[in-house]
Amino acid sequence: MLDGLAVVARAVFYAGALLAAGSVLCLWLLSTLPAAERQGLRVVAPIAALAALVAAGVGVALEAVFLAGNDWGAALDMELVGFILDGPKGLSLAVLVAGLIMTSLILLARRAADWLALVGVFAIAVSFGLTGHTRAAPGVLLNALVALHVLLLSFWLGVFVPLYRMSRGDPMRAGAVAHQFGRQAVWAVVGLAAAGLITLHQLTGGLVTALATPYGQIFAVKLSLFVLVMGFAAYNRLRLTPALLRGEAAAIAHLRNSLRLEAGLLVTILFVTATVTTVTGPGVS
Image 1: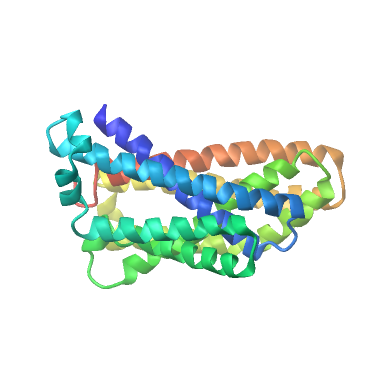
Image 2: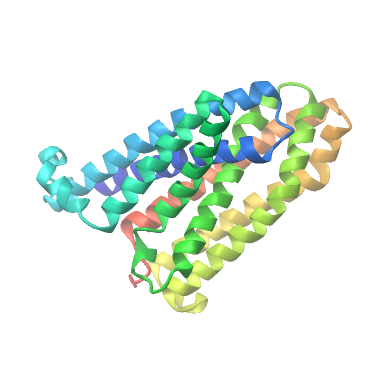
């Protein structure tokens, strides 16, 4: 039960942090977003950031419960919580909190606040590489790969809210956003796949070796799901986006259905990732 709660908390944390960062990235990178959707992202970012903060706090509390032998009272033991946060985990959480607070400033709709929010996005990405399995690896390659992975996945996740909202309106306006995102997402797909494979290789000493471990097997499931997501992205770019740009009424319903399936796969990937980082590790066989 404790492991299950920890996985859920971490998945919610991942979703909140990525959505907060992605909302800011979409505001910066997608000039075709209508004013209403831009304002919507300015609201989504702080809400997602708050969810990530709460989930991160719950995660620390659950870790305290685990260390105390499933004593739920330990969740409020500040001495034990302080012990957990004394080290890389505390540094990572501090950088994360700073990043989430800065991304929330996007709500102010001021140029200076937008710049601070962008800095917050990079702080969130960096925080992911300051703890966990990559922390113990020598050098900075894995830390950089994790940060890149977070940035690219955030951008991908951030576009879902505005595109889904637009999938109930004018197909040509949705098509313009999907077209601009598609041109930029091509590089995100390549970067995400490369970063994932290199990270797995570095953590396990080889892709073949990785498949002999629970960590590598779950990671392989994650990559397989990601291939399915890329399939939907390819479909959107080659078939659906041109139909939207032509103003075809049926295309808008297809976009909505495609976004639902793609979002479901991404949520599954987040839960698989949470499972990988919570109940197993690269050294477990």
